[in-house]
Image (spheres, one colour):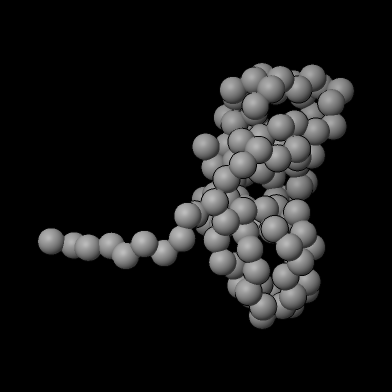
Length: 110
């Protein structure tokens, strides 16, 4: 029988900045097929915190987004969209956003 040892709650994960530039706090980070949000400034090679749950106000691309709609993060544009093709699943919209809105509330990784 397999056993597991408790590690951490999981709302935030340890994350090492493997890049060459500093990651600013609140930067969206693609983590495989999911996203996280940097909880702090993370210097190159350093360990920091990556939030993987919660509701965040995020930049929205063009078009309307319905409350409850699945949304995706475009690494190219740095925006939330309802287009899945070529983008990373971000979660779902917590409230509707009109075409003129510049942000949308997203429950990440849900």
